[in-house]
Length: 270
Image (cartoon, rainbow, N blue to C red; front, side, top):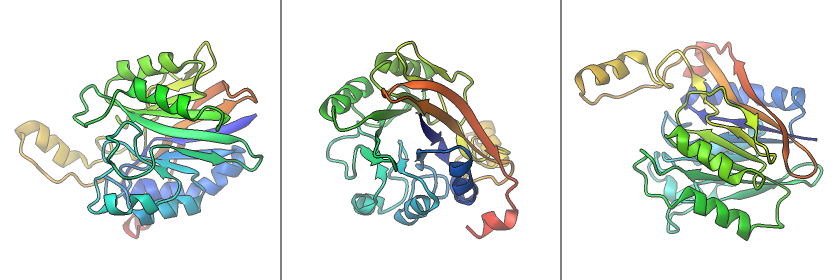
């Protein structure tokens, strides 16, 4: 049996610090074969840097995925090609730099394919059809992997649920991200695909999807633009653990949550 931990969007320094502090112990306690993390909000709440991706790898992350904020940090498009263990969404335009998928091998030689597709509903990001892209990647890489994780980074729950059913029996797991709010619908679909609509976020939950409350409320109340600093309280890791059999299918999926406490000084120094 293989164990895969997927963690939702890492938000700013609080999410990074807790992840880097706890991951080694979690790998041992949960007997994890792979850890996959969405890192698109890891740098100040938007985007990622090469240095942060390297820190994640050192902490024990096997693959870092991205979403619609992939280019949130200035200049990252020039360095993404040099970042190992990271992939940008597979259905971004082909001219975008970076790897569209990754295949990682565990200690026993089992191969896990990881890729992300962006949703098209309410996203405002130029992206090809996520359904057709998933078809293409799985078809083109057939025979090169034993297990597959497809992340659907999307706003609409219907689009995520639909992709889960579409890939049932063809992907080992279909896991949703983007809303930063964990859902309660983890299940194994009839043909053996683990599914969860949204893994939630790794970061401060004493806020509005990772941001300080006051400026977010202000923007809703008067509509004026404001900076939205990353919050700091009630820091948690959110995601799911997928158990996979030797046939490449899921036998179980469970929501995962791990809370601090996280000293304020640790966040301030990150």
